[in-house]
Amino acid sequence: MKHPPLIALSIALAGAPALASPSSSQPTVGRLAELTFEVGSAELALDDGVIRKLGSIAAWADDHPDGLVVVDGHADKRGPSSYNVRLSLQRAQTVRYKLVELGVDPEQI
Image (cartoon, rainbow, N blue to C red; front, side, top):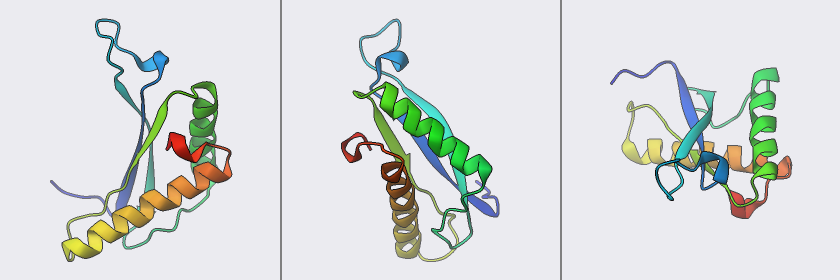
């Protein structure tokens, strides 16, 4: 699988009634947003698009207090796996921190 020069971080929503499958009592997971980082960086560029996406996620979390925001960090496969795992975690933590700043309950992330 080829990776783009900007690496994505996926944010999914789980467990909310609005996402429950009509044919099942189990909730489904819906993908809400994808944020990008420069290669090798865990800094989030807070441009208008990113701020809008994070605001939408915070609004969703506020509307669905029983829902979960799942933040899944990624890095490309270049370099040592230990570095990529650490970078992925740092990216996820960066997004988590920003969501908490926007009022999302840390227990919801």
